[in-house]
Image (cartoon, rainbow, N blue to C red; front, side, top):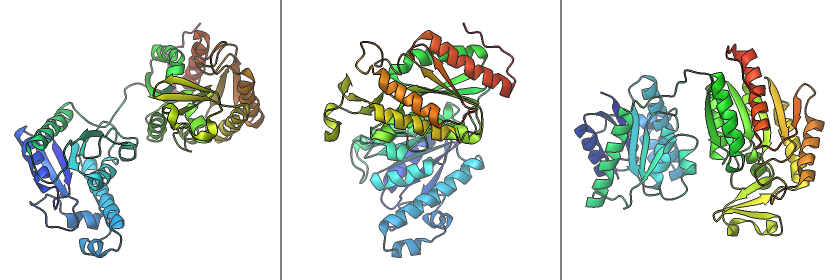
Amino acid sequence: MRAIVILAALDTKGEEARFLQKEIEKRGHKNLVIDIGIIGKPQFQPDISRYQVARAAGSSIRRLIKADSRAAAVEAMAVGARSIVGKLYARRQLHGVVSAGGGQSTAMVTTAMRVLPLGVPKLMVSTIAARDTRPYIGTRDIVMMPSVTDMGGLNHLLRQTLSQAAGAICGMVEANGKELHFAKPVVAMTMFGVTTPCALKAKAQMEELGCETLLFHANGYGGRVMEELIVDGKIAGVLDITTTELADELVGGVLSAGPDRLNAAGKLGIPQVVCPGALDMVNFDDRESVPRKFHKRRLYQHRQEVTLMRTTKRENEKLGRLMAEKLNRARGPVVVAVPQKGFSAHDRKSGPFFDPDADRAFTRALERDLREEIEVRKIDAHINDERFAVEIASMLAEMLGKRKGLTTRYRGR
């Protein structure tokens, strides 16, 4: 049987944790309860006490209770829980984690959950699951489930929710939930709605070569996950078609992947082909979310909840310099492929963002600042033309063939 860890503050959420424990046992699974409460007496005896959690953080419950800062005490318990969860997983004593709680518990528990690799089941029943969950999920595959009611003891609706949560975590564990391992060389690719035709064609070409492809939606979260998987050593090569997250980071859009975007592959020396996909735009939510200073800019309503803003010539020049700065640090093979007829579905003749001068400003700045040995391949095609997709797949296939000894030759046109 596989052990499911229940993380809970047993001084305030003991009833909920006990109910989860019984439901998990009813389904034939072992469980292990970790108490992350600080002040009150636990409502039942855990397998790992709050005293052990505090010690794992280099502190003690007495010291945390006396601490002036409640936030610091909570953070310490989160660090202790994370350390214990990581060790349990390393010893193969953990096959899934579940919890139920409010905002404070959610912050503590998801901190611990994020130490676990992708593929290991993680379920958080939370009073704040209907809000923006990005700070809690980070780049991990944590499932957030709304509790619907607040948690101050059991009621009919909460029992049903927790029963379903127990069924869900057991089902996830039974589905052989474990860390991801790949049998084939893995190619990471970035895609956006406005670069989808290119990504799908290139994906087919890479799979014909014998690679497994992972498509990441370039929406901030996708870029961060890809960078993290590269650091984890899961990726053999990168076809970074859609670097639009750089524009959001530079200008202030809502889909930034942070300052580390486009760093990991270069740092590890992994072959990469990089394109300026969707660098013609900055992303916002609905029209009302666009900052006042941008109201006179060229805006396009992609969907009711998505407003796009055309990047300017000056911004494209900055993006060219930024990309060059990042790629100049690369330790492995790099090619930058630039489609001469537009960077996205909206950046083409008769399209709302067609601006060849702005696109050329990016290319000029890139070529001026990029070190000599990094090739800039200008392709007389639009980014979504089949020719462009075939050529960039061919470039990466050649790099991987030299580096990984792949025997299947790329068959492009």
